[in-house]
Image (cartoon, rainbow, N blue to C red; front, top):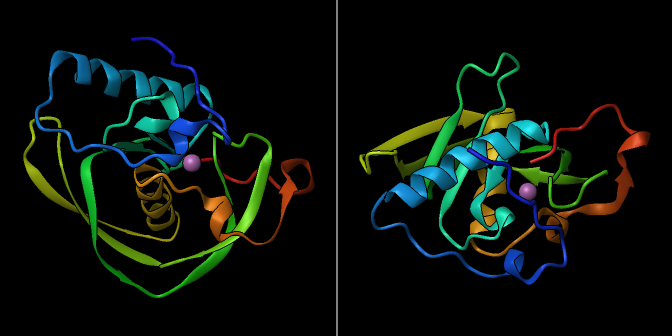
Length: 163
Ligand code: NI
């Protein structure tokens, strides 16, 4: 495993749509391991492959306080949403900043696991927010496009999550 460089906002790779994964090759397995390591090292709660410069539809998320339920989503598609939540959101590709974004409060996503078996994951609150945020990355979008008001420095806030 190795840490990968996190691409920052303004890098063209973050503005491009990602390609579907057809097969989990050893190289993709290594990418996934590296994505988890890079996310944890940066104290993030989510990371999408384009954030480490790879245009593939792969997302890792771990937003539980104890870190006991990391999620790997390959080719994720959001199939259901409901409700609404409005709150601060950050991104590892825009370090030190946060902004207010409204997201669904409930999300159901269909994705494939490491063995390319399909599964569904449901999330509310922070997990729902993280799923939406990371899936946006796969289409070349960042949360700044959805921010209500101005971006703020994290020092002015209490420890917002970075995704
Ligand atoms: Ni992000």
